[in-house]
Every structure is written in structure tokens, then in C-alpha cells.
Image (tube, rainbow, N blue to C red; front, top):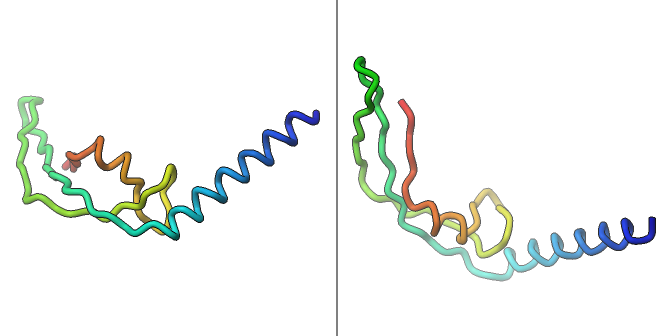
Length: 83
């Protein structure tokens, strides 16, 4: 039972440090390429590329202040918009 308490304390400490790091570090921007995926009658999809957009991100493990983490956005630079 003691190890559960240690685990919970460690988890809370990690989350608090992550939040503090997100508040201290400056926000960054990552360029995202959005596109529309328009379904056609024959079952295929037509791809319509849009202009690139800069999206603000935060340097942390988890999303904070309404921004996605930079590590996630850097790995997902294309944004699919299903029509």
C-alpha cells in the first residue's frame, strides 16, 4: 500500500513540474499543412490542400493553456479535415 502512495506522490510531482515548465518556457510555433478530405460518390476521396498555417505550441509533455505540446505537433505536421 505504501508503494501506491509513493507512486501517486511521484505522479503529482511530475505533473506539477510539467506545468511549471510550461509556464516558464516561451511558446513556440510549428508550421502545419491542413487539407480537406472530400468523399466522392465512387467511394474515393479527393484531397484539397490548404495554405500552411503556424500553430502555437508549448514545450511540455502534456497540453497546457489550450496549446498542444510541441513534440506532438512536430510529429503531426499535416492536419486532415474530414468533410
